[in-house]
Image (tube, rainbow, N blue to C red):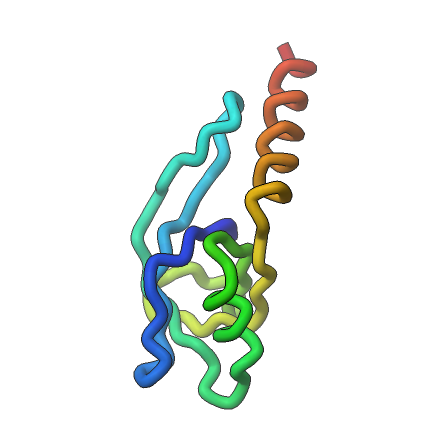
Length: 96
């Protein structure tokens, strides 16, 4: 799931995010505000999210409901996000 990180509460092991999608024109579409648990025994995920504005995250059992626990996170730079937008635009153009 592609997300924009809104805030991180390290004391409570929580992160607030906006779930995003990219439309055929390359625009980021906010879908839903969510709050996930951070693993209490692994600071690497917290560090990744603290150092990124956007991330691809995966939760236990691929469950994207509030309070699911993040098990994997990959920070996404603005350049990487732009590349993904261009791929989606190109795919949409070639489908027409």
